[in-house]
Image 1 (tube, one colour):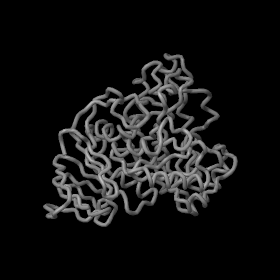
Image 2: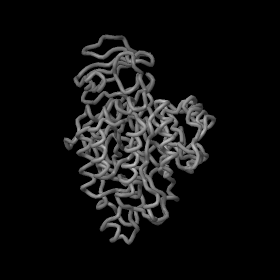
Image 3: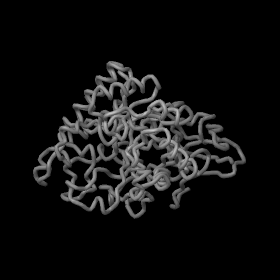
Length: 430
């Protein structure tokens, strides 16, 4: 099967190419990139006016499979990812049961291979049952195919156990994906600790809840040499500490989620639990710091922290409702609308943070690139197409987003994974 993509703006961080060009796919590989490619392909796609980028890689996704499939499952999550231009996802381990042994990793691997149209990589839990008391079989899970370990949804509060895990991760050459939250300081909080929380009469979560663990984890990365990846950074101090880590040459990377660079606590609507997420929405000063950090390449990655919940679960009070929003189907539009269009990052930086850098962090040598011979994972995006986000159009089971009704620019037109078209927008173009 050959697919020829013509006339697109080909943006490839691996080769630093950013120009109008054609791209030829043959079977499951990139065959050629250049101007005026002549080939009798099985399909020709005119990508005039569109970005042609390496398939996006989302390092932070909750697929809820097994055990919580009323919220999401591997099939629906993979479909939502494909619609969002994402060809590889890292699934977090806080399922039921927890992904803490090789057999459970194999379940996801086999189900994804049979039913998902994109690449699903299961992350392993750091401790058994995510209880923070005893290390999981990390070497066994690495053999089963995990690309990283994480305790996402919580931090390993026992610093010695966490250090031991980081030493193992260093030896096995995998990163630790860190959810930075001092659970002892949360104290029942459900939104940022500020004047808005006082106005709503709700308990707050201070920046220090995140900042204390970011500091601890960076120190441990320094001492162990382990690659630490800071998940869903939300505070000004996190940006400052990551910036300092990079100046010192420490093995630390970080990510920001679209909701954290788009919204502030002032945008919250009282009693609307679609604004409840962890970490919470922060102040404008924090958001400005995150955007500056993205602009300066202090933050390496944009991930979604896609966290679907059922409507009944979200239809509770702010205190009782679960944390989390969905993001797979909105991340491209929010990134273009809030960052690219406003001059915070370039389209090349977008490709770096949403594909190339994630591939490097988790050692996916054949992905994140449009170089000939690499995997034929490609996304075509129309950066000018305007539309209104509508949860009724989501293919994810989760509809929990504060962005319903938001007008945005930037629409995924075609997603190709392994040389096969796995999503195609049915609009007028392409």
